[in-house]
Length: 109
Image (cartoon, rainbow, N blue to C red; front, side):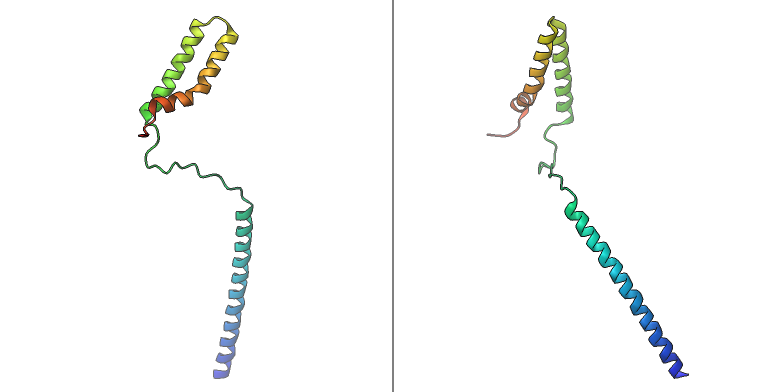
C-alpha cells in the first residue's frame, strides 16, 4: 500500500513539475514578446510642463479665442481685398503665440 502511495506521489510531483515548467516557459515567451514589442514601440515625448497648474487659466484661454475671433471678424469686415484679408489673418495667427507670451506670461524675469 505505501509503495503505491509513493508511486502516486512521485507521479503527482512529476506532473506538477511538468506543469510548472510549462507555465514558466509560457511566461518566459510572454516576457520576451513583451520586451521586443516594448523596444519596437516608438516612445512619445513627455509633454508635461512639470507644473501642477496649467500655464493659462480657462478664462484666459477663452479670452484668447474670443479676441482672436473678434480680430479676424474685424479684419474681414474692414478690409475689402480678399488677398489682403488672408495675409492679415495669417500674420495674426502666426504672431498670436508671441503676443500671448508677451501679454500673459507670469515669469518674474
